[in-house]
Image (cartoon, rainbow, N blue to C red; front, side):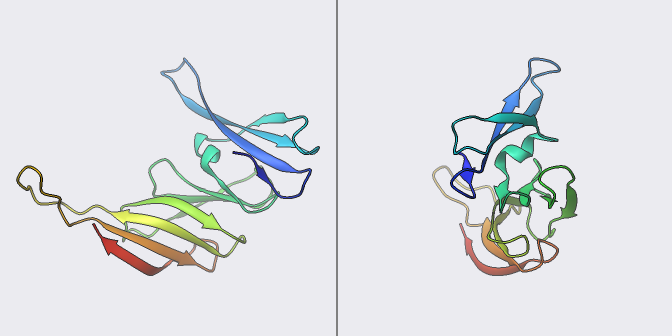
Length: 147
């Protein structure tokens, strides 16, 4: 789904596949300056860009494919920085930033679950909502549930 920052300006990232080598993943970023009447595409540096959280026309954040690193740009996709996410949680799944500094994340910790009898649901996964005020350098858990 496209993200519009003004009535005329928006982004639309799309994940792509290629038949060689071995169905490799990539991404394109479509941009419009005329309210979606026309679009131009630019290759993105990595496939995860297709799932980026666009904050404004120059800032975006995303999570690497392993769910272990935060990738951020502050110059409209030209350069990206990588910040390791807290190891307390096994995988970060989604981000929602409202400024380049202020955001939330959903993370899950997958400890070893005990082997149960058929039909039993293990209560061992911890899902948490985390909050950052410094662009993802540090995170604070604000809520969690054991499922």
